[in-house]
Image (tube, rainbow, N blue to C red; front, side, top):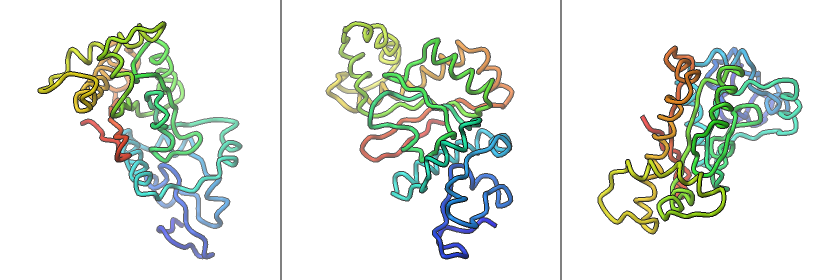
Length: 244
């Protein structure tokens, strides 16, 4: 039986794990005891029953838990052991390397729930695309989420034409977003509103690149098997603003 938030029949606090609320009471590990619930990890059967839209909604709920300070209690050692023989992530997240935007934390997910790729400026390259294709076409993830964020240093560097070793080529991949951003006001890295506008465009450009450069992911989305979406994480509020 799935208990509501609060105390279960043994007086223990009921804990909810990522995506369990989407599956219905019969699919959730019974709250017979706290250790059993904390050990629960996403199974293939549970992941496969969910639609991409439902997974996105659960990711949003996780972000809401993070912002409200009501994150799920997890036994990571138990989750590590439970996933050692297999993994069934529901989504793959492409984020920036920024230390303030760890996807697993800001979306309140556990070990085995999401694939996570991180690169400065959350840009798309061949290696990232290959990783996403593995995540979706081979491992069965149903959502590709490109996650940008406010006050992004990579965006600022691209705006300022920074040149430094291998970073130069990486920042060049952000330049198309600068060109395509329509903005009334000072177009400077010192203007955070402009930086954030470019960051939003950069997410959209990344999504376009995924469609254009990966026939595998494009085909899966056309079939309705996966959904490719974008979001901007606000460093000030902790909220992930999803793009329609």
